[in-house]
Each structure stands twice: as C-alpha cells, then as structure tokens.
Image 1 (cartoon, rainbow, N blue to C red):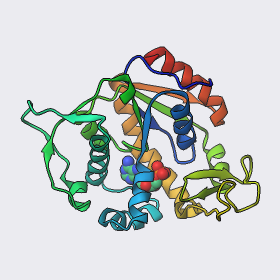
Image 2: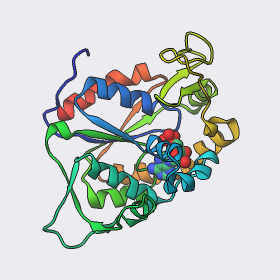
Image 3: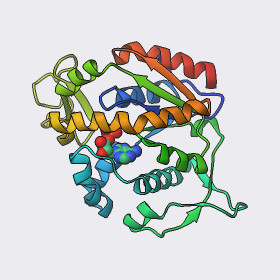
Image 4: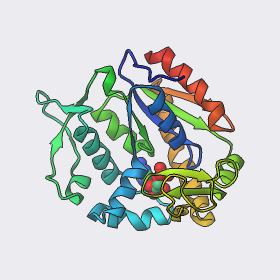
Length: 256
Ligand code: AMP
C-alpha cells in the first residue's frame, strides 16, 4: 500500500496487545496507510513525565515498577486528549454524565462532568494504543465514546521476550530499534540525529516480567468484554510484517 487511503466510515479503533507485541509499529503503519490519527497512552504518560507535570510525577514510579496507573487518571487523560484534538464533542442536550475530574485536576484543569459524542467524519478516524487496559477503563470509555473496532494482537510470549531484550529507543522522537533485526547503523546511536539511544527503564527484565503478568491479568476481562459486545477481532502472528497486511485488509473490509 503506497498512498494514504481515505476511509469511508469513521473508524474508532482500540489496539490491544501485550507490551512488545508491536502495537507501536502497527500504529505507525496504520497512520501511513490510512487517513487517521493515534493516541498512545504510554507516550502521553512519558510526555507528562518528561515535562514533570503533577500527573507525570505521580505516574513515574508506577511505570518504572511495571504497574498500572489508576483508572480515573487514565480515563481523564485520554478523554481530555480526545476532546482537545476535536475527535469528540460534548453533548449539551444530555444531563447525566461521567466525571473526568481525576486527571483534569492533576493536570491543573477544571474538574468537570461532561458527556461526549464521537465525530462521525471519516477524517476523524483514530486509534487508541494502550488504552483501555482494564475492563473498568473500557466501561468508562464506552459511556463516553462509541468505539467500533477492537484489534487484539496475539503474539507468542517467547517472541515478545526476545524483542524486548534488544529494544532501544530514541526518546525525543520515539524511534524504536532492535539490536537483533532492526539495529541502528552505529550501535547505540540514533540514525537520524546521531544522539544516544537508551533502554526504557521499564524494559529491564524484572519490570518487564511484571508488566507482562499485569497485562494478562488485566486484559483478559477487557477482551472478554469486547468479545461480548461483538467488537473484538484477533490477529495472530510472529512478526509485525506478518500482521500488517491482514490488519489492513480487515480495516478495508469494515471501513473502506
Ligand atoms: P506502554 O508504552 O503502552 O507499554 O505503557 C507504559 C506504561 O504506562 C505501562 O506499563 C503502564 O505503567 C502505563 N500505562 C500505559 N497505558 C496505561 C493504561 N491504559 N492504564 C494504566 N497504565 C497505563
């Protein structure tokens, strides 16, 4: 696929997959294949940590230890971002609503109770990478925005562990390398800027094993939830290259 394809129907996709399953890679490829945008909850949190916001300070230790940031904070953070980008709008004619005060307060904003409606223009298509991660987050999101496709990346654990062992990142740009199959031209150096690459603190073996355990415990109920409401679609593969064409085809079938 060369040109960016316009979708005929607004797609609101949730990308689910264990850490190291290639969510970031698939997300980047979808953005270059289809007219759509993306939000990564992990990137948003890391941005807050870099900028030392109150939320970032709160989240830093949790992330370093491989735990999960509180549902209230995450829901507020993501809903706030969706509104900021104009992909959802408030529905003034509805009275009851969901409080998104947690993160708004921590971000220094005004706590408010609001209900939202997704923008149906196909150009407002977006994907969420890393959110929701728990059934509670999913239900809170459902109350606010009707998501219409949930993709579960099913990658075997041994493949994931091998990937993580070699993962290096260029933090300012988010470029990800792998010492095994996608190495930088000069070891430890970003190809584009010549700046040093680092390992994510939460990629150390102990924290990663914990992250994987937390992921499976919290995600199983999430997948069950989306299966029940008929939105779940699972794609299996050992590599991102194997998964991308199957995923692209499914998106075209549903939204093209
Ligand atoms: P990721 O880049 O998606 O692997 O996320 C990195 C870390 O950010 C995770 O290990 C969690 O600590 C935190 N995080 C990201 N998304 C969420 C979420 N939806 N709920 C709770 N914690 C999250």
